[in-house]
Image 1 (cartoon, rainbow, N blue to C red):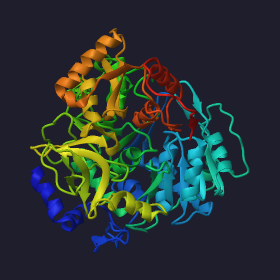
Image 2 (image 1 turned 90 degrees about the horizontal axis):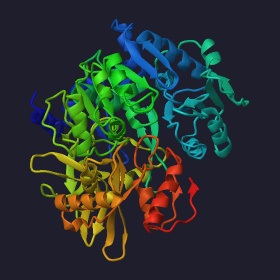
Image 3 (image 1 turned 120 degrees about the vertical axis):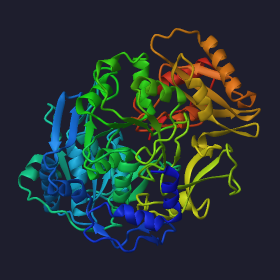
Image 4 (image 1 turned 90 degrees about the vertical axis):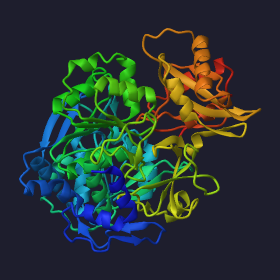
Length: 636
C-alpha cells in the first residue's frame, strides 16, 4: 500500500476515510453522523453510533471462537508469579466484577477511581467499568496520597478500586494505606473502597468503607455489556498542567475504539492473534491504549509486566519476556533501553535468548536520542521506530506506519504524520515555517477520532490550553520542524526551547550530542539563567558502568563536540557529571526541577519522583560547582 496516498485520503476526505475504518468494529448501531462540530470548538466522531468497549475487547472474540486464546500474559518477576489468562477467563472475571459494581449501586455515567499496581485486577477493573458505562479514572500508583486526593475531589468517584499493596524491587508499596490517607485529605468522600488482597503477608488496615474484592465477586451475578453512545466518556486520565493542577483528559468510546483498532493494524503492524507488549503502566496513556484496549480490541495477546528493565533480576528481563511469550511487537520508552544499555553495554545478556519472534521495536514517551536508537537497532537487528504522541491524542500522531509501508528510519525523527493528523509547523506570528525551521507543532482541526473530547468539568481550560493560541488548530505544546524530505522532528516541549542572546535553541539537540559520547549513559541539558545572554545551557551526564574518565577532560571533549555539531551559538560550556538523574516513576527526567534548582527558584519535589535522595545529590554537585542557591523545598 502506498503510504502517501493512504495518508492523503485521510486528510482530504476525513469523513469517508474514518467511516470506512469504523466499519471494522462491531457496532450495536452503526453511525450515520460521522463528523460533527462540538460546542467547545472541537469535533465529535460517530455521534449517533452505539457500542460497548468491553464487549469489543472480550465477548466478540469468544463469540468468534477464540475463548481459549490467551488474552493476557501476566508476568511479575518481583513476586515470582506468572499467569496466562484466556478470553474465557477474562470474561468471567470482568463480568463478575461489573456485576459487583452494579450491586454497589454504580450505574451508567458514574465515576470510579482505580489505584492499582500492575496486576490483572487492574485490567479487570477498567473493563468492568467500561462494561456498565461507568467512567473510570486510573491513577498511577506512584502518586502520593495528596495527589490522589486532588483527583478524588475532581472526578468525584462513587467507589475506589485498589489493592493491598504494590511490590517494587526492594520494597512494598502501601496502596491501601495511601488510599485511606487520601480519603481523609479529600473533601469528596467516595462511598466504598474495594480492596484486592494480594496475600503477600502485608497487613491491610481495615476501614468501615472497605469491601473485600473476593467476597464482592463471589456474590456477584455476571453483568452484560451495556449499549452506550459513541461519545460516552470511557475514561478520565489526568496529565500535568502548566498551572500545577492536573488536567482530566476525557476520552470517548467509539472514536477511541476506531482509532485504536486502526493503529494496531496500520501503525504497529499487528495482526489478530499476535503477541504485543507495551512495557508501560496502566496508569499512563500508553497503558490504557496499548496494554489494555488496543491489543484486546485487535485480539492480540497483551503482556502485563510487573517489574523493571533491570534488577528483576538483571538487564536481560526484557529479552526473556520477549522470547518466552513470542512477542512480535514491543513498545517501551528510550529510558528503559538506556538503563539496559548502561548495565549491559555490549548486549551480552541479550544473546542468551532467541528473539527471532520480534519484528518491530517501538520507542516513545520521550525524545529518543540517536545513540539509543542506534544501539537498539544494532543489538536487536529489527526496525527500531521512534514515534510521538501525547496523553491528549491517545494514540500516535507521528510514526513510521509499518502496517502500511515501512519507510526509511531517520534517526532523531519520529517519521511522518499518522493518518488523520494534519501536522503543521507554525511560527510565533502564525506563519508556516520553512523546511528545517523550528516552530510550534500544531494539528489542523478536525483532530482524528480517539483524541481528547474535553477537560473534565473544565471546558474553559480545554479551549485556552489547546485551541485558543492558534484558532483552527490544536496546539500540542511541543516545538519541532519538518525537514526537506517531510520527516518531522520533535525538539521537546516549548519550555525546553532556550533563548541564548536572541537565538532560539533546542536543548534536545544538545542532548543528542552529549548522549552520543561513548562515556555517557544518559544525560539532561536544560537552560539556566545567564546575566549576559539571558539563558545558557547546562548539561548533566551519567557515565556508563565501568567508565573511568576525568570530569574536566570529559567536559572539554563534549563542549568541543557540541560546538562542532551545533556551533558556537549554542554557548554550551558547562557539563557536570552526576551519579543519576531525578526521574518520575515512569522514567521521565525532571528537567524543570533541575532548572529551578540551578536558577535559585523555590521548587517543590513532585510526588512522582522515583527517589527523593537524588535531589540532595544534585544539590551537592551544584554547590561544589557554584551553581544555584538553595531555598526550602517541600513535597507537593
